[in-house]
Length: 117
Image (cartoon, rainbow, N blue to C red; front, top):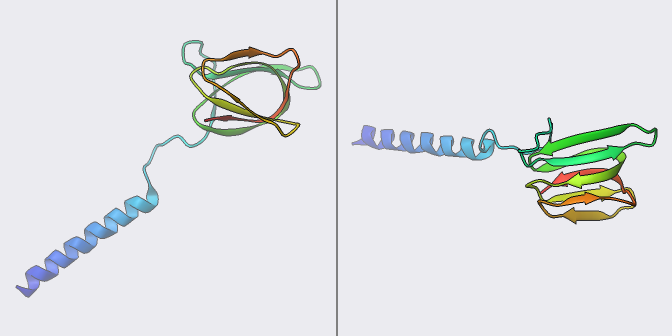
């Protein structure tokens, strides 16, 4: 009887240790950071047309939730795709844009960071 009780206690301790290890490690493979991706018009990515102060133009696409530095580039146009987006401009303003929006700016904002919500 005592050896059976010991086996039950050992089994319960092992199960508790496994549960604790999984809780601390968390699920594997979840996207936790925004990714710079190749633009695909059918994918619903965030797409940003921009330029810097020295005349260089760029078109960039992003996927997955997260926040990334945008380096103070001037944003000419934003197409949010299937993403709710915030951008943080150089004046300290935070601007939220709903998914499926396409905005062309006549007075372009200088953006320090972008975030997919």
